[in-house]
Length: 246
Picture (tube, rainbow, N blue to C red):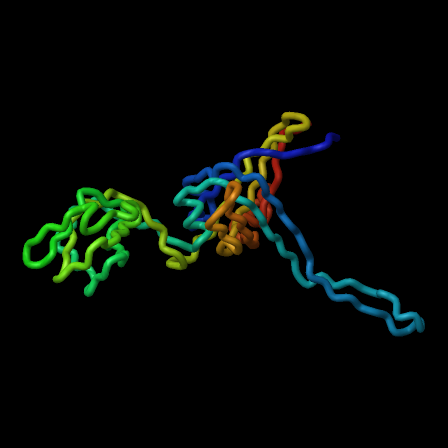
């Protein structure tokens, strides 16, 4: 018997067709992880005593809900939170990109690629615009250009863009994940393992984008019944907690 206070690493893995975990991914710092178990019930009130007393309790269902907070800004975590796919944006050389017309002094336009360098703007037919006189780069990362003079003809852009990685929101429903908490009871320094076999997460409900403090990704999900692992007596249908024998 002991008190307990857990910490540990949280890992997620996609599942094989046989219900086994595949390659695992560490989610980084997870300051909060909770499992909520609940039953759905129906009451039966008796009608023979004159007191309408509770006479029965019928269990109609069992549910398990998982809540966790992710502190790490990684492509994997963001994709999990946004139901997103990870898309590579390769480095490239862009030439002849047509800018909007007409353009006035103070107008800000955005180039098609992010993280730009070596920008050259050319006004038709062949006049090269001067940085600091005709335009300035407002943000190289976003590809934002502000015009300081009004071009008298169409303008095209040539530039380099660095390789990048994008996550595209609501482009996929995440597959079910196997969750492993490789934990430790900080009160006793004893190792504790928690496995949840079929976790299906909702998209992030509160995605803070500007912060005064550290940001986080709060996620909720359901732990589903797993008939594949339920057939194995020492696994059960939802999950299990494992620790060393006393």
